[in-house]
Length: 349
Image 1 (spheres, rainbow, N blue to C red):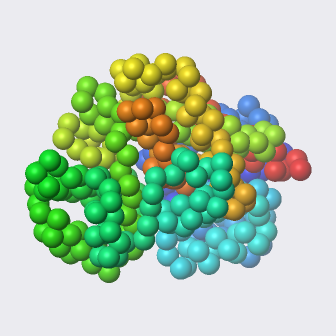
Image 2: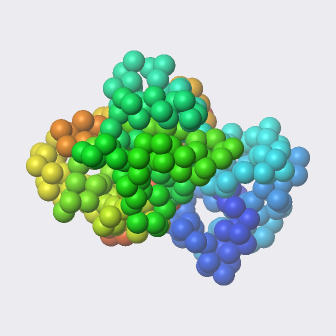
C-alpha cells in the first residue's frame, strides 16, 4: 500500500461515509485529490485509536475497506476535540503521527494576543479586550460601535453588537430579536446578563463596507501546500441578511463573489483582492510561528468603507461551503486538495 495519509473526522461524519451522509465534508473530493497525488486516504475517528494502531476506512481502487492499520505517519485533522476524552485520544494519536491542525478551535482572545506581538500584523487587528463590566463601560465611552462575542464559539452564536446613535442611545442587536434602542446603563445590564459567567471579549466593530446597504466581510481560505508554504486558496464574500449584524451563512447571510462586492463599494476589485490576500498571508504566517501545527484556516476579514483591512476572526476548521455556494468549483476542490498536498510534503520530508 503506497503512502497512507490519515484523515481524522468527527465520529458522526466518519460513520456516515459508507452511507454518503457526511454533512459539510465532501469525502469524494479527498478521495479524488488523493488519487491525483498518489496517496491513500485512511479515514478514522478518535474513538477507534489505540496506542499503536487504528481501525478505519481505507479508500483504494474506488472502494472502502474497514481495516486496522498502524497509526499513519501524517494526519490531517478535521475533527473537533471539545471533551477531555477526545483531547486525550488526540494526544495519543499525536505521539505517533504528525497531526496538522490538531488544535482547531481557537480562543479568540488568545489569537489576538499572539498576533499583537507581531508589528507587521498589528494594523490588521481591531482593538479587542477581555470582557468585564468595567472594560465595557470604558469601551462605550471611547468607541461608537462594539461587538461583544464569546471567545470560543462559532457561526456567529451569541454575538451582541451595540452602536451609538445620535440621541445618545445605543442600538443593540442580538440573535433574532429586533434591534432595541437602550440607554447606556440598560445596554450594559442586558449585556452583563447575557454574558453571565461565560468567557467573552469586547471588540471594536469596524464600519464594514456594504453591498446594497448590507454589511459584508470575506472568508479567506489560507492553507499550506506542497512545499509547506502558505497560500491563499480562495476568497468568498459573505453579506449579512437584511437587518442582521452577522454575515454567517448559517445565520441567513448570503455568499457573493468578492470582486462583485468590491466593485459595489467603489474599490478596484483586483487591487483590493490582492491587498486582502497579502494581509491574510501575513496573518497566517505570523500565527503559524506561534502555533506550528496550523496549516489550514478560514480567516474572516473585514474591509471598512475606506478600504482598510481588519481581521475579524480565525476559524481553525473552515467548512469551505461559501465556495460551493458560489459555484467556484475549482477553488472548492482546491480547498480539499491543498491540505493533502501538504500531507504529502510532510510524508516525504
